[in-house]
Length: 584
Image (tube, rainbow, N blue to C red; front, top):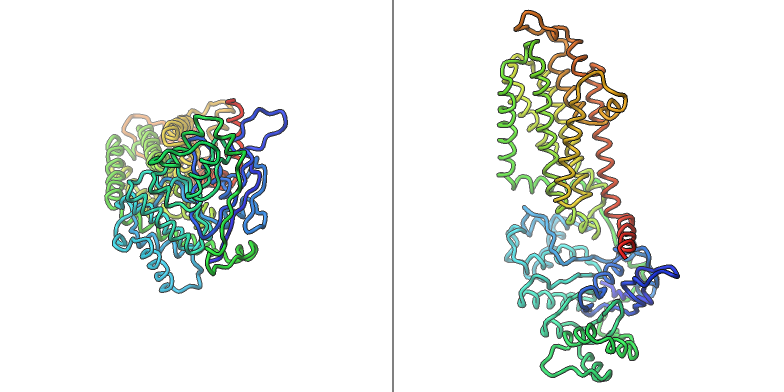
């Protein structure tokens, strides 16, 4: 491990043009965070702690004034991201995996592919032993205690041996003992030459005294930069002595927030902190160029393989959910088909088959869209953390999301087709069952990407409302079957995947088929009249299937672009800054 120091000078955020009102969150901050020691950034709510750590970790890259350097080499936001890992205050862990499985899967993603499996296991076990997780190796991640989850979050990132670790509120949500153990762990990691930087809102006296370097912020300005032991003499020097038996951290925060004079005095006697490099031991200080060359990443296909492996392990563990899903498809298929039992070969009751097709498409659409709409807004936080900390790339994740549902989506749609259409017309051939299943699988894939797109854009509450609203509108437009429609309605209908699903089912059911007639005269004994009355348009199965394929491609592209914007683009950050300016 090489020593890595982060230095920042005259940091202003957001950087504003002349004549703009003073809305700065960080105001001319300077300092240096050294390896070999544990640094705590302290301050009250809204002081700018999280903003500073987001900036130093490369998660804020626009509207920044000043410069940031690693080992005296000026670096960009991308450089900062590549050289560090960032752990937020909530422990975002993949569920339905044991601690051991989580570590080994991450080791496959992060460690050099040339490293043998036994060496990867040794790396994981050494980290487990260091973080005191040996007794929890076979425990599911969702069953861990708060302290164990925090240690596992750290362990997963330590596999790649990062030189810099940023942590936002590492003690939040933990009891005093777990918080003390977490800080003690961070201190031991800093002894290995790592640069550990964490924000802490209001530390207890015990936690505060465990820190080695503290950086106090109030109203976007640094009011103290130094050691814990140096804080009380500093307060005496500015004529605001800390009372005995009083936590110095609490005192300086309370006084700076309630007394503007103390902030002015702090700024007047402020001196930057300097660290004795000898405390870093024999660790080598390397240039940033050499530091970047140490980082490696496995290939795209290997990443996809590991992510698919993780997905299938999780799916296999969720047996109850899979059982409910199977029963749900069969029962809903039977209930839908029961409404029109025995009417499939009757030319007088073709409207029943149209309604059946519409009901089948509606069921499949909502079944495969509603789960990602409800779940993905929470899951995307985990994915963002994993991609941000360089576990894998967005393309590998996207391909995994595209392929992973197919092994259970295909048989489930076939089960639904048999249970739904089988009792309506028992004379259907295997070929027609297969064609119906392919159409419904196409609808399911489109709905899968549609649900993920909505879930990626909105939070769970808004996604549920907007997702169901848009799907209902699409269903109504797609089911509008009268052949005398306006050109505008016709164009809109061509863009709805439900239209291709319904007409595809209808074509499969009636194409090249002789129907019986239960009445004296049946208009729909003529196949062409069925298609005309229900507005099928071009009576071609391949056209309907092609329409679904185009919809799959369009929704998949939308999903990928949304993820790209969320994970990599500065558009989200720019939009937030714009909204902040408008609100003021």
